[in-house]
Length: 113
Image (cartoon, rainbow, N blue to C red; front, side):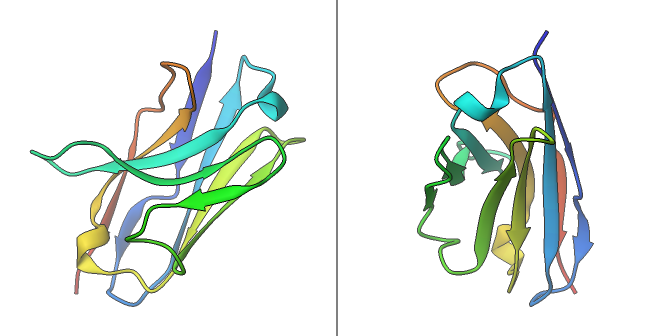
């Protein structure tokens, strides 16, 4: 059974940093492209970043240069380091196995003073 469990969300002030982690189980993790997405109420889910099996990365335009995605195949984890956070980064962040229907439960990130 595939499971994705996110952690690390919370409240942070504008300009601050936060690190999200996603632990995967039930899959051959190293073979898959992993992604982080985010969603605010009333809007579509937005791609934040992806990392493929060769650790090549891609980022949404709104986070490029501020966020960094990484993976640890031994630990079966994908992380998202978020820096220079802005109030518009406030959302529920989801971990996803690309090209599948497997999603984590989401973790709330709130950027506010």
